Length: 480
Image (cartoon, rainbow, N blue to C red):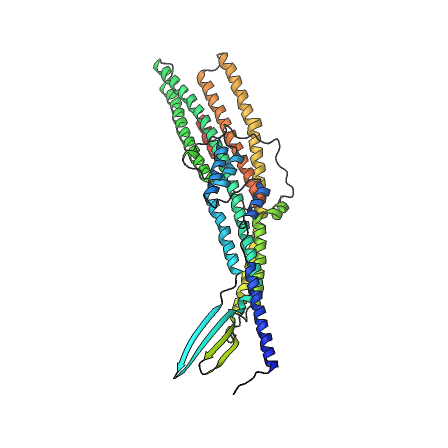
């Protein structure tokens, strides 16, 4: 007997089929929207770097890019490095930074993957009973994933923005560290040159004392004092040379150079002190408006809030599947249809997931507030350090060094008039050299403090105590 399906029933089945087809088509379109960007998200990092510090970046994705970077580094190394040249080399050539750029590619791949539909499931079964054989085929789609795709897409886009901000922050931190290492290495080289002058003066004084003791014009105590100063001068020179080597190697690591590339030259002296310090009355507001870590904390709070909304939306549809079924048998007509499966919230109503998301959200809000509070404190500390370093360096330049120079000139006049001896003149020369060396260290501390201030205005700084006073005290002690 033939059974005819009524037209109305056939129409309803056709409508359902069209709806399912439309649903799957829209899902395919949404899945196809997730694609890779042309620059892998690197353009945003480039723009941030250009706007904040005015330097170029290049992502080394292959041998051609590495060759281009090597040529640029060679050009910059052709002359004594300025601080801007050193920063540019580090941003192009530092391999740790290049490894950080790969985080963009990794995250973008994860974002694209999250925007793609999961592959449909296909099931096939064959059953037999006597002469009857039944074949069952099924095609299943994850509808829960389809429902959550718009929210997931927005969440992943914000996460990618966070990664971009974090990579940009690593670029700016490397630039600040390179500036500080540059000024430290340059000051160490100046210190070595002045300590060599101290050693030469001590050598001359010790040799003169030895000869005068031989002819009976010096006693053993006077000779031992001059010899003690010479021994201390040799020790201070050895320490200065070790500091010079270690600071230069730190700069080498930040620049990412090796082999013959390490034979770069530095200028002979530190840059001069600016005519006046920067005045920043609204420094806290400026820092909160443009610091990347503050912006990142805000973005994290927004993303967490979005995650909370997604958790509340999907608490009851954790498992939701749509399936198309086709059963055929050698003794019965082929059966076609669809099935839908979902998880019954009998034991787990999703309350724990929602509570966890709410706790994470509150945690993120507190961390964002902490970031803002710390940013205010850090930028104040950086600015007060900058102003103090400027005042100290200016005092050395305008008061201490000129005063010691005038004393030296007066002592030269007294020596020419035979009012003082050669040892008094040598001792005064040693004191003058020590004051100049302390001035170099104060100028170094100022440029380091300015690098910290610049970083504090755009990101979390690495505020470190200046190393100048200890070395200055040692030099002064050697001179006395």
